[in-house]
Structures are given as C-alpha cells and as structure tokens.
Length: 153
Image 1 (cartoon, one colour):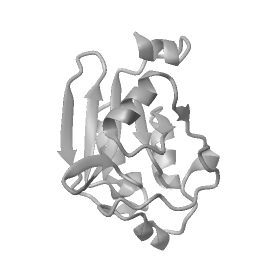
Image 2 (cartoon, helix red, strand yellow):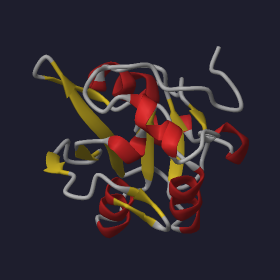
Image 3 (tube, rainbow, N blue to C red):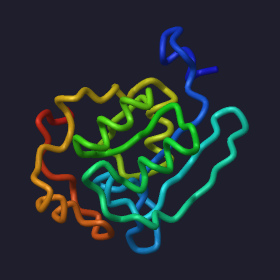
Image 4 (cartoon, rainbow, N blue to C red):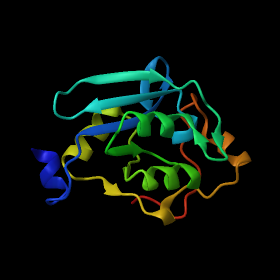
C-alpha cells in the first residue's frame, strides 16, 4: 500500500479527515480547519467516503467541531491548510497525525498525501493569529489562510 510506504514503516494511515468549505458549489479544503462547513472522512482501505456537516462552526476554549468529528470517528490523520493551537493540541493528544497542504482541491490533496508529498505539521506551524483574526480566513470566500509561523514553500 502506497500510504504505508510513505510513512516509512510507521503505523499505516487507514482513516483520513479533511476540513471542507464550498466555493461556487464546489467543495474545497477549508482555509482554516476550525471554520470548515463540512468534514470529509475517507477510509483508505475501502475507499469509502462520508461528508458530514459541521454543526459547530465555533472553535476555541477546547471545542472545535471538525476536531470533535475526527476524534469520534477515529481518524489516523488529518489533511488541512491551516489550524489553530487548540485544534493542533487536541489532535496531537489524540495521536492524530496532521499534514498541511496549500492545495484547495480535495483530490489533489489526497494524491499529494498518498504519494508522500505532504509533510507532517509541527507545533511551530500552527495559526498564530488572535481569536478575532480567525474571521479573516473566510469560510466560503476561498480566501488564502492568514500568516502562520512558517510558510510552505
């Protein structure tokens, strides 16, 4: 399996979670995990997919709808464009691997992940904006994620 090779012998990724938004009716990766309107769950063994609405758009103070879904469904890894410190901490505590991409396309992000092109997110890579600046991510406008402590090449 390609994914197992990409992790160089570590625990294989079986379930993936992605935070989504929609622009012009086309689902895309959300600019910020905490502002996703939906989450996509992908079973890598069966290729099954499920899209769930995020009924808890608010993130902060230890709660985040997408993170709650990812933990409750037992995902092994999350692919996202940006996320905050609280979401990072909760995912890391749940032993969920976090991979970051600049890609908006779901299929392109999955291909990049499966081919080993996405790198694991480090604690220093999380969104450094204040709670109020998270509004600038733009849930459905397709805006680029705001500054993070490290930029992707």
